[in-house]
Image 1 (cartoon, rainbow, N blue to C red):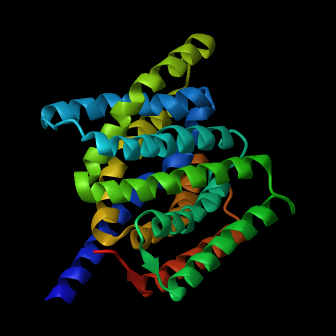
Image 2: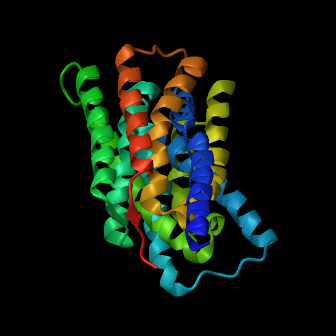
Length: 297
């Protein structure tokens, strides 16, 4: 019975993780659509301001108590990564790169998250798991190198910074979600970050205005409500019950989904190398799913 329960929890965690990834997979196309007319600071930080308002409403409606002081450090780490770091860095990069290209680079997030989980919460993936993760990640780096005419671009480095920021926050959030609950984690992180978010957003609005096309506003609305808020409900809950390293590998599917959405919504060209890189990544997910990961009790 214990084994059945473990497998059931893991499968359920992967299911929640996939729902989160499905929500995240439109983030880069939506961001690219938004930054065509809106300043990256408005898109990168303004989305969190909107999400913070939603978080306050949810926390008030459900009468959630304030988090204990010992959890505030973790919440600040989460906010620094997925509310400041990743949104800002990815918004800037999406002014320089196609969303489909950025999707492959962010395919490094699962490996970085697994490494962080090993350090932070003591998960111990097997050699088979690391092999699968490294193969998928090498496909990502090779793609960036080839599609960048034999060199890594500055925007690629910026996206790598976004990857590190996201990975640290994902691991920390997955750990804290085991204690507080997935949706509570992202809601409190948004609320804690909101006082710092407002000032740069307001200043940028006065400097650059809010004139934008309906498409740009639609993209902004998506990253505010789905990418920065609702998708995290499923994502953190999935990592809490299925394991951080294991569930993080589901995000290796995100490049493939983002490439499809970029082509359908933005008309970006899909090249054979994109599918080859995404195919290798998807194969590594399948291999990694079979690998053993020891979790601390």
